Amino acid sequence: MGALRLPCLTSIVSVSSARSSLFPRGRSSHLLNVRKLSSTAKVEVAPAVQEQGITPRSQDFNAWYLDVISMAELADYGPVRGTMVIRPYGYAIWEAIQDYLNIKFKESGHSNMYFPQFIPYSFIEKEASHVEGFSPELALVTVGGGKELEEKLVVRPTSETIVNHMFTQWIHSYRDLPLMINQWVNVTRWEMRTKPFIRTLEFLWQEGHTAHATPEEAEREAMQMIDVYTKFAYEQAAIPVIPGRKSRVETFAGADRTYTIEAMMGDRKALQAGTSHNLGQNFSRAFGTQFADENGQRQHVWQTSWAISTRFVGGIIMTHGDDAGLMLPPRLASIQVVIVPIWKKANEKDEVLDDALSVKDVLHSAGIKVKLDDSDQRTPGWKFNFWEMKGVPLRIEIGPRDVSSKSVVISRRDIPGKPGKVFGISMESSVLVPYVKEKLDEIQSSLLDKAIAFRDSNIVDVSSYDELKEAISQGKWARGPWVGSDEDELKVKEETGATIRCFPFDQPQGPKTCLMTGSPAEEVAIFAKSY
Image (cartoon, rainbow, N blue to C red; front, top):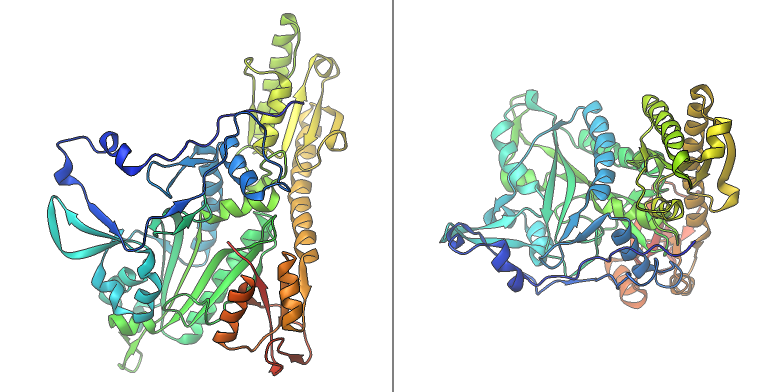
């Protein structure tokens, strides 16, 4: 089968050249003047792919990733540097993530709401470590309606500050606690170097915020939410993340503790796929968020915040994809089964399409997400390549012979070629529906098993700094005992490019000796290069 050729990602349009079409003349007084604090962001641009198929993963992982995003029609570049347009097929993955997490959030007592994206700059300044951590990434609005604003506004980088401002007005008594909310919003961070889905100037996420009467409740909440993320990653995305605690250096600006799920991508780099922060009383003290306890005493609330973003879509691409393109776990696929009808003669077309439509209706009625590709502008072979590249888990082929035998041919996306193809599956709903559901479950499990095997084969246990450096130089993750200082941690980053991804919750038993200092250590840390 020849390589599939589709248009590449559009080249980036400069802001100045795009301005005339984006902002018609005569309307300038209504524009917001947004200025950034950092220097101009750079963006990774996809190589042209019109004249070639997808770049092989082993040849150039980054080019492969950008090719897949382009050719699978997941996203395109926006006219402003570092922004992206999420196309319907890519957004459908995000919707599947939303659908699952929304249920879990509401089951655990959280309510959805919305906070404004413009935040007074003075709010950011109230929590010292918060402003220090976020200043390089802030976008500021200085002019609105043609007039200089009295106070600069920050375009939401995260919402802890504005949430606390409102919590202070809503929380008065212990009876108002716990207060547990979530919002699905966009976020702006002026990144220096961007990569579609992984790091963009604007991205989508959910951010949860809770307030509690005791530190124990806040800690339980932070741990509960990282557990929700972990289960989502394993059970829905088939990504075997490692949950754990961030080091002090890597802790969220303004948090006492940050918990994370770390995923290994196909190039063995780590991806921070979700975080949950125990904020302690840092923000409640900065904003005066207090409540009267049962004894009438004024206390500051204890808080958490937690988030997963569209970065997770990039994680799915880089965990499961192969040289043929995207490979979607069935539980997150907007199309789980594609039906490709095959005919050569005009008199075969109607019978084949009738049976194909019948099979589609049977699967749809059973709750399976199915698409019938009955277009006649492309050959069946082109369609096979196209839907494989878009990562659809199962393909059903129906030709004249299949019509005669009232059966279909079924191919698995995760097993290429003949080994993944089965002939003669009956069209009868009592046979076809359970078979398709069983295969979708098998694919879901197979993707997870394969990702676990890949992850485990690329984690090296180390007991010295030399062993750590060797493991990192080979592109692997290094796991070893650690009680090093912040300075020691920064030394590792400077000399190897690796950071502590987390101290895993799952810790080995027995005495340990720090790989850097030689002192007794209570836990191991995982080091890796990351996105």
